[in-house]
Amino acid sequence: MRLLSHIIYWFASAKTAVILLSVILIVCIIGVFLPEGIQPKLYYSVWFILLILSLAINLIFCSIRRIILKSKNIASLLTHLSVILILLGALISYVWAIRGVLELEEGQTKDRILRGCSFYRLGFKVRLDDFSIAWYEQRPQLFELDIRIKDISLRKRLKLKENQQITIDNTNYKIQIIDYLPDFARSEQGEVFSRSDMPRNPAVRIRITTDQFTEERWLFSNHPMMTKAKDENIKIRFSWMPTVKEFRSSLSILDEKGNIIAQGLTKVNAPFSYKGYNFYQSGYDLDNPYYSSLEVVRDPGVKFVFGGFILLNIGLFILFYPKMGLPNLKFFQR
Image (cartoon, rainbow, N blue to C red):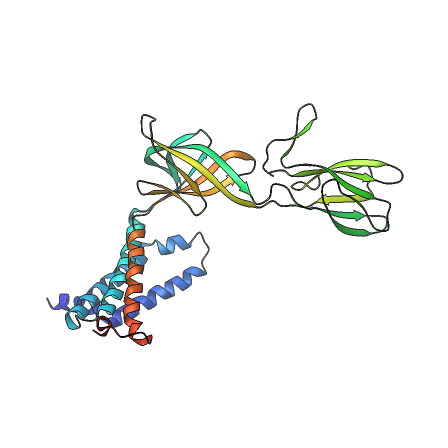
């Protein structure tokens, strides 16, 4: 009984909370400087989880003690309970959370996700109905060309509109943009065309005119070295990097018989949810416009963590309200 009393007293001590918090803080600081591959081994180790669990038990005993000694101190009670909820949520996430990757192409159906080095069965099927990418611009308003002329050691950057012709200063070179393709491709017969409206392989066709000749070239933003030039004296590079605005996937949830039981849309920071599983849009492949990568997360501890932070804010508000110079309320004077 005496040993049990000492254990209870130790867990109910504020000094114990300070010691545990200090140790956890030191471990977290050390973890910051460790390689990313080693950090999970530290934070998910058994002894670190035992430290968190000990802190949670300590806070529970401290809260019970505070309720007995100062039953009217609501702010302190809520603050203690909030930390307990946050730690409980972290523990639940550690034990029961599920995270994995789901890679699909349009029309493809899968019922399992890649979780680490193994597959995890979801209990239902997921089908990618449609995938799309939106861009801020599908074509540049001004085409930027970096020009270098060897014989006079000239370097210059020009900004042109389509079909606009500009004469380079102190030379007889005239440059004109005569065509633009957002997704350049060449057929087996040698004909050029755009595979889609998406700027996955933007290219411009320019016309170079001098007093002696006229030359046309295709310039590629993604592949600046892939160009054929008759006049080696003038080098021209097309520079433009389109920016993705958002990418989204339309999903269908199917049962074992293939019947649709739910449908939804997922995009960055707006996941689609089904039976506790959240489907986050995480990746795409510019070389494959039908491919989508999804992060699938099921974390039952998140609600406890959110609830803990709500209680923490309420407790801090009650604690500091009398010091904020606001109208006094009897509720906050307990």
